[in-house]
Length: 200
Image (cartoon, rainbow, N blue to C red):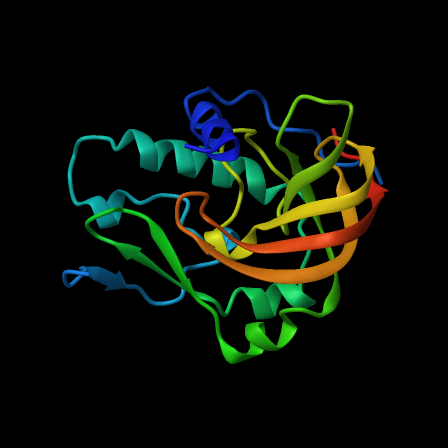
């Protein structure tokens, strides 16, 4: 397992802290193809009706709490995020790894320099960073990127900026990935970044 995957596994074993404050002013493989996933802000606050059981589902409860915390926080709308969301996600039922099928609109962006605004999710406990994730949603839990797989972009900057849950603007060359182990399908390389607004 590579270093990045190890980090993701270790982070997923932790517990969430308080939400950040909003800013002041071969053989035939079995693949389940799913419809485009809901954007994170469209996930129902309760999955009780879908579960159909009287017993509480801990994962559903955790996601509902994260969604509830998310609703009062800022998010980025529009721009290239709408295009990236058109990537269809599937899961290999045997390996349980995600796969991405990029649409023509997404493929046309590949290799071009694009600009994205999003909220930073640092990958290490450093004061400054050149490598992090961004999504359109303010993170409420360090251990769960607050987005669907087609709403998260890995960013590699030329020069480090201050790490945190900040709203950032990054401009870089979009590369498409399909790495089910990392669960990341977009990378912005050779990027420049700046903090638009500090959060938390």
